[in-house]
Image (cartoon, rainbow, N blue to C red; front, top):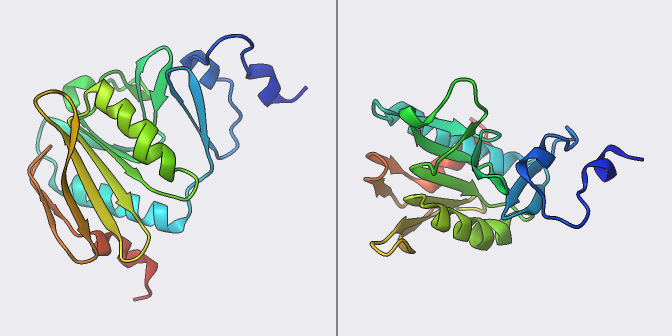
Length: 192
């Protein structure tokens, strides 16, 4: 019997406890409402864009918040655990002895890839909205690069507040002031 078949629950949804038994095979294992999501390791453009955004946010974050990357998870219940590519959390919400955030982050960022595009644009977006993540950013590494920004409105629903491509600037005010240019997040893909 393989490791994978021994952890698949029968007749019930997955729980976060089931994630502990998943193989260490380079895939990302996440849960939304008991449904298992498996994503392959990200490719170079995905990693380049996410890492550069992480770097840009880390250069500018104010006291009281921290910027983290996957595989740091957001676990808000026994049936849901997601790993945003980049997240911004309140320092007070973090615990040094934990590998997950127990509350909604201030910002969740997903970088699209062919295997995650539909999940990130639909399932994870809806999950972050229900969770109360104030800002959700979607980065697309497809040249020239783009950034779509969603923020919760007064009724707790995401509204798209910006979409920039290539060399266009997005000047964020939430969760803190920072200017992001999608094409610059991809500079590491070019020599020089």
